Image (cartoon, rainbow, N blue to C red):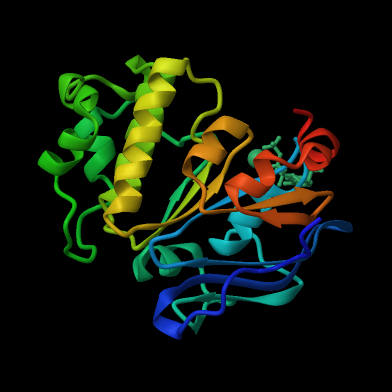
Length: 246
Ligand SMILES: Nc1ncnc2c1ncn2[C@@H]1O[C@H](COP(=O)(O)OP(=O)(O)OP(=O)(O)O)[C@@H](O)[C@H]1O
Ligand SMILES: [Mg+2]
């Protein structure tokens, strides 16, 4: 089994995200037990693991929603451990929550623009969003609650992009989606990666992870128990069976 390689050592400006020795608790419950990982510029790094392994907690900790008891978080070599979520978002970290967080009574356009005003100017505009997700343009006046699960997922990703992030934290974008919709989301994530966006992707769907990830970390009970490439992970029957129930 590969060791707990955190990832390649890169120059500061190319190290988009680094978690170093993170221990996170909910009350007395010790959930993350020394998680270290890094995401380099233009890389898609996947975080896999069973339900309750600590995947969402890792993302929440990186984003500042949950503060680690010990450990350090850096974005582009800057220590962000003490920053609040909105400050981290302003620096250029986009977050797509597992529950999507769509406002049910706002339209598609309102959902897209509600946070985007007054933020860093950048490449993402409504026309570019609609080119990435044409279905959202077709639903432009619909309210959040009228959208399908897949459309809500696309809207949630699109809303994060409107803040022009350079690093995207995606928590299980494939959860509960029909294969055809999932394929559209996979295609969109690939094109984001091709544009140079760095992505930390939580994914329980092994096929999706293997299709997208440059590197994979498997979490088990709050510890990274395996790190490898798609070829290494896809061929490691022991890890797939013991930690991913494949
Ligand atoms: N707010 C909370 N308070 C207390 N315990 C929590 C809280 N949120 C999560 N936990 C616990 O922390 C552990 C890790 O949860 P987490 O949501 O990070 O797992 P996950 O890997 O994202 O799981 P899933 O695949 O189901 O989304 C679980 O045991 C969970 O029950
Ligand atoms: Mg989760």
